[in-house]
Image (cartoon, rainbow, N blue to C red; front, side, top):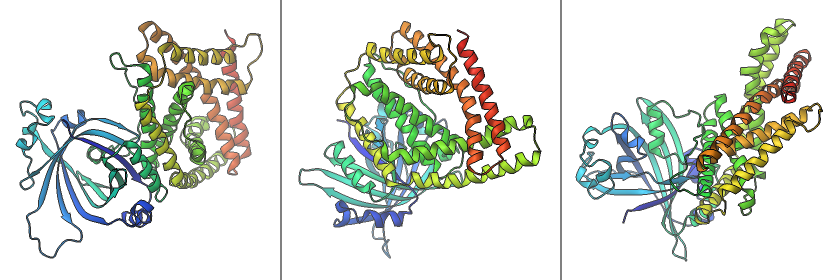
Length: 500
């Protein structure tokens, strides 16, 4: 039987390892339990063309040293070889194959891989002969053993250290909960208790993936949507749950990177992940039990929205319309500088919102709900999913093509834009599970939805830039100029909609 690891991983935000340890030791489940500490040095291996990464596997050597270290070592260093295979991973919870064996010194041992999944992965040892160290992780690990009266046994590990690759380093502070016995629900229960003490984000990114990204200089790269394909004979309900897991992962990964990077695309992709998740949630709502409350997320979502408005205004809208500005150039430049300052100040506020423990708790509850849905499949059919998408398409068309020759108001245009997003994201997620004829129909809906989303969105960007300028005390003349641009673009969208 294949050994299984069931683990929940959480990224700790803003706190140093020492501060996180102080907070965690006050948690009821850890307060009176003995803890142990060790230094861990991990060396990860792969082929030059990254075969293990492509197959979502990891092979490492781990060196363990006690903390504090004894004055004189009485035993040779302990090295452990670990091979992990791809498995199910969502919302920070992973279940994957894992094989460990002690090895001599810091050298890989092929014999220790006999009888594991490596035999099928590399039957002729073609890869093994090419393996080379790519990156390292070094950290201080603090562990607790949590045992309950019902037989549950969970190992809690706090890792604080750094990843090293190609002369680059990146710090990390992570919390890992591994089930030794018991269910995934017990992991989530303990995780929620600990998340009340430290700000966290559920994370599907392993240390191996973190090291690979640092090696490739992609550690803070924005996480974009990954559109999933339905498996052979896979029920559409199963695809829907997998899609929601991927959407939550996109949201969380971009939030994590936002703590360390000012890249506007991270804000954009975080919001895309959230909108995709909300669209799927709305599509599946008739088949879902009560969902976790989103109220704790509202300050963060509002901050993300305003940051996006400021980013678009500074990097897209104002540069686009600067040549058309009829006023003095100094007025435009002064207002741009005011807006840039406001943008930087708001980014600090956004990170404060992100570090609120309520955010991590809400994401944990969503991840737990999705995990439970794997054990209790949705009673959703292809016909029902298609009917929901068709309903959104009819609603969008009704707004854009009214029954009578009436002019479409701006509010209806923007309501149509929201429906277009919902239709687009829901269609993208489920299209591959539908018959070919239905897929063509859904693809037409997606194309129309994306076109209207873009057309109406351009007008909205001009309006939002004007409102941002007014909010920070920029030029009123510039604000009215941009509102005029937005009104003209709205007019163009209205005329396009009326040409039916």
